[in-house]
Length: 249
Image 1 (cartoon, helix red, strand yellow):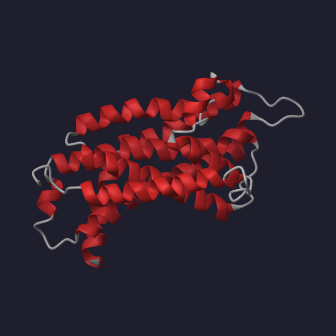
Image 2 (tube, one colour):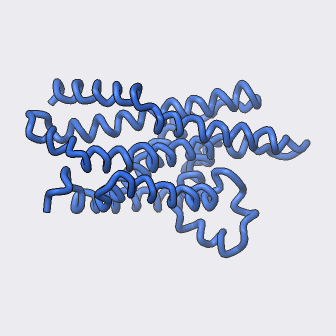
Image 3 (cartoon, rainbow, N blue to C red):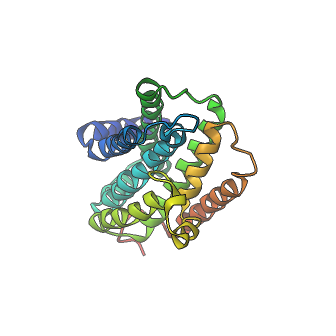
């Protein structure tokens, strides 16, 4: 499996270089959003700044963009075009395909997270996270949960174009109801209530808590439980629904 894994992972990395649109979207869109609002909302004296609050949220936006516009269309596209079906008749272990696909998208998230930390530090004088282990755990859980959700959606979608359309539809409520771009508190009451049913809202909450060293504090425990529960549920759904080919029954 090791030889097949290294070979397929090398192919995934070459695809990342040759077709960088999804990766560029995941890196450019959150960074542009972060810089725009960081300059639009200056720091009022004696209060916290947009930058201090939204640097971890921008990291969540990277994860969301990778899951919806990188992993989901890529997964469905490769299955729709028969790539997986052809690979399965080779000695390549199917696990190598999954590991390589996840590794490719995880790499983009790592780069995006480091990018947000660097932008916050060099552009806005935002201190680097004081609790990197907590941030790593929060990023890992958020990525795993949103990736599993993307896999579950990909299990039910057979066309790459459809996958991209659904990703675009889901992205807007995930963005605006999560607090990743603007304060949820400014939304109407019904929207604030609805935000609690959006997975991205809980990802943003645990990322902010982890950045401040309060990942296991009382304000984030429920969100942690929801993210773990959703992760387990999505994995169970993927095991039942995922097919390597659209021709499988």
